[in-house]
Image (cartoon, rainbow, N blue to C red; front, side, top):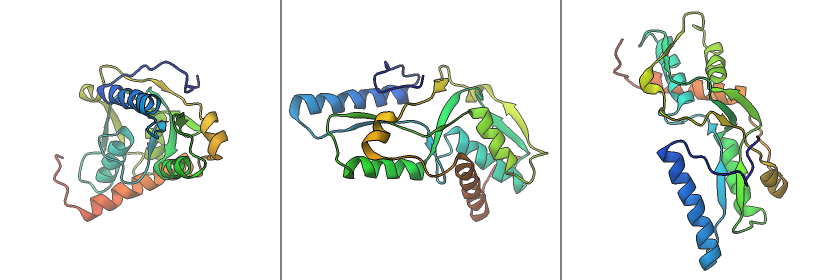
Length: 197
């Protein structure tokens, strides 16, 4: 720790296995055929419009629904102990742009990620702290939300990418969480959610 580009792969889900595969394929096609590839290993990034299959987004959606009285004030969760380094999706997009426009080096591999680390539980507590009904919200661990394997420690070393591009995250974790929650508040207000009470 933190995880460098040279760290061995330890995928903990079919999704992460697919990422390892594409990473290896891009390197192969560069080495074998000279295809202009750059492999990126983007660590946890989130923000407004994040799909609700991801923990932080489903938490924010549940809070927004509870604030409107559309569900009971119980946030259903899985593993809250997993450690992540968080960054904002808008910083991530800026990183990708720099990667392609600032002296791109084909065949390279770069870690990209934030500088703020916290557990999933800490992230949930931040979202709850932003709610006017925070004192009413309860947390319920649901077994169906717990993965059979989980990557419990994802702290990235982005030194190589930072040195190459000068990129550093600009949006704070607090702002990301606020914007994510506000996004779901807007979605709840605009939509007729059919939910079970």
